Length: 289
Length: 306
Image 1 (cartoon, each protein chain N blue to C red):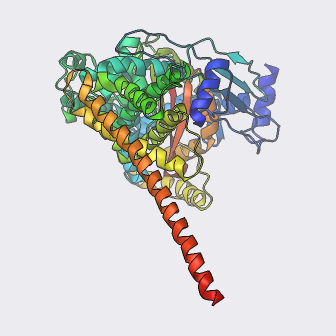
Image 2: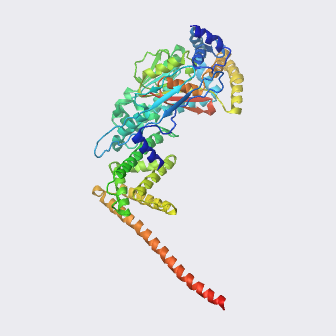
Image 3: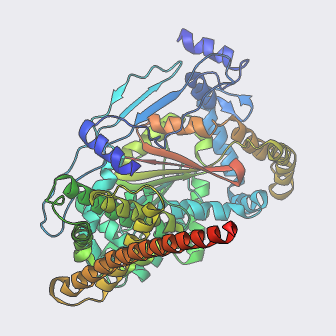
């Protein structure tokens, strides 16, 4: 107890890279650059996403210049989905990643027409989209309807907390979390939950905005993040605060190497990461054996 | 050669060499405190003596892997990992996939079937090293493994003596190449696909290296001690013989590939004959040169004397 108090006072003064305990603690209590109590963090994040839900996809397009689509494509191609797969997409509210996986699986099916076994497997594919925020899930469900996937029983929309998943142990072939892990209160809990629900041979993939180290590019990126994005949020979505939180939370998130070690600590093997756009986005992957 | 040597050492001693694993750990130089993250991982032993589809005998090798990480503030004990490590599992999946190749080709489907057979989620197929195109890399992973495995068995065969010393080099070469190609015989119906995968620009460098190693091993076993230009010539020639025989084998429908072995025999003989011919031609040139030289010397001497 005493230790926690000490680290709490220290963390506000010393750089958060000090030690893992305080880093995780500081993540749990940071709302962007503000300090908040742990219990409050998830509520505040909830409010942010309820506010942005309706404009989420539009803002993504604006902020990344449409690149987020390519990033998600890359994530799904790394996953290499197969028919009959049980997949869990956490914090995947609006369904971007889930739709891509479904498309990929269906196209594989068309390719492998010669194998009669696959027809049965096709029926078994299940993609669970889990999100803590019901507004985001609603947006996702509407998009599914628009795409004509409303009746598709492969897509299952579940409301749930990434830190306490309602799925059984060893039940998922794949787990993805795209642009979501930044917002959780306890990263290590999410990682250990991910480890729990994955089967042997299952893969964990995390797509997240990360740290840029390239000298000149870093300055440009910082300028873009802190000056352009909140302004854009104000104009397009009418919500400057949420987008200020967004860019700040990116800076507070552990850098690539640190995050990779956290994934390894959760028990994953073959932990790697791939930087896209010089580190603006990183895809971390791990294997459960 | 390096790799085969390393393999042999790893097989016998089961201790670490020096191959960095893909785990990355930060070095917190910027931190105020001196907490340091380091992870050293010792490489696993490569699985040896894998499945031979012809005689269907399996022996799996256990892989041992040690992960130790020492952190500043979060103490972590050295973990001797009793669970199977991912390379071992990947190897097992590849092994099992080989059984499906004949039916499904060198493809992701074969690997997925292999994974299911072993009882591991087919997601692991996605974790095989990829370069750009997902499917090609998966294919590469399977094919490359197969080549390594055949090479390994060839080496074992060589090591076990097998009356190779008694044979003259051309016989020796014939036997070894034949033995190696026989390993591919079960997959011959899908082999053109495998060759096309190897020829793919992304995979060319790896397959070229493997071929070079193979050729080197064969010559080494045949007792070659050349160290100059000869070394390259010999290997190039053998590479040519091997490749042409392999391609001949693709369209050979004779029982037990008799025609292929005949073809191989002829090519090996040709190569050795050619070598002899070149040698003789060199001697002749030397003799002529010497003869001409001395008579020229005598002539010039006489001219100068006058």
